[in-house]
Length: 324
Length: 234
Image (cartoon, rainbow over all chains, first blue to last red; front, side, top):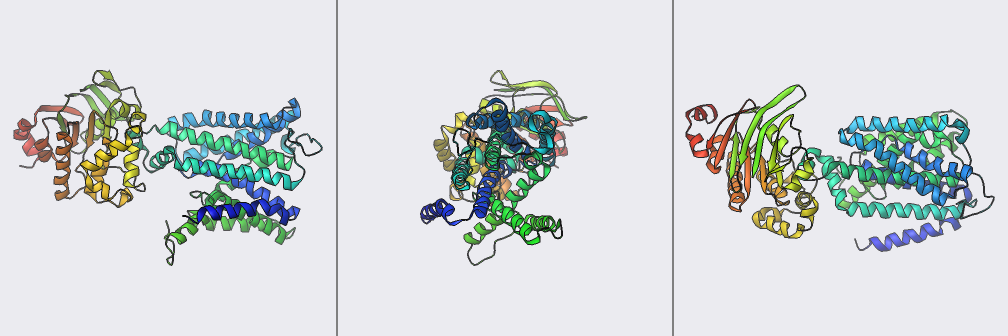
């Protein structure tokens, strides 16, 4: 335990020095890992309690589109646009989550409701073609230079620090939630919802609170992602593929651990990039197939993810981690 | 203290309770006895707010509670020890107890209540860092009772506390119930283990296929020929 703080500080220093050592391409990957790591962390905040959302693309889409639309059409700075999109995502989570929780929609049905939600957002983006550019996507109007007001930083290294700060904030929030009473209550709810209600836990409030936090943070991640790429299209933020990728990566990395979702981001992005580079334009689809097969294997053989496996090995040195 | 008036309830098209009325006075231990499927657990689920009544109502100290969700019924002063204990198996004993004090009014007094529950059940203190799922049957029942007591209820509902336990442990559990009574708690207990529960209760109701068929002092029911034959096998 005592070795933890120095280790964390050393890691932080390394992360801060990283832009000096990396070429642009690798810095690009690092930024992606940080941003997706943040988004996966946000998803895991609820996913780890059995609230498996297959529709976080809905919140990602709101976070991606709303600030860009407000900037392009109303000249509203992302400093206001992003918080607004966060509120909007939380509101959407409330509108869908309230009846779902009230009517005790859980498990597979809950997953399907969320999946449908992401499709509604996706189709809305496409339908609002005049404003959003439809399936072709849109580009936030460029400020032409690094600008805090526009939250645009053409230099990757500048954006890297922003992504790092966001990611760290996500981890801090995770730790704070982990220590709150609500987190234990959610664990209790996940184990036995009826018993939890019977001893005085307000099941609905606890579930909705974590859902709103997760949705809001996901929108925040979506906003940052679009400010970084300076481009957004419906499929890349709200497609089924994205929503599923969030789930797979968080589970593969380990949704029960602080760094699990980030490990998931590292794994999926490095894997996807590596396969893309390895296969190039040969065997179109082979990269995706291998990627898919690997994820399936991960989920079957490591339900607690890579982070869970490592923690198991550390907790019981010399013995293999027990399968859960 | 608790008055249940003409409560009907069921699951979908299946009706399990037909106009059940009963009363529990402060300081009393009242038993509801009956066979498997008589509606005992359904009655408990209605009073703890887990299942809405389709008719009738119930009140604690004159305050109508039937429209409240479960967590607010706990806040009003009724705690439920569910059938089969239903602890949170991966949480530790202490975390389970902590969850029992989740309602805001109890959270403030968490430390003092915890000390009191540990005093009542020293065994739980020894096991406090252990996942609740690893406790023995009797210890689990202690933990479930302790968890319910953490909210310092006026009325404790106990649903089949002896279910699934070995005879020796059943005896221990009934001793626990005696101690809870001695602490001054009002208890409404549902049991299939008729002989033993009539031993510790003041009064009892016989629930038969969703209706109250008999009621009276526990000693009286224990001597009732019909009950002896049908429920005690004597």
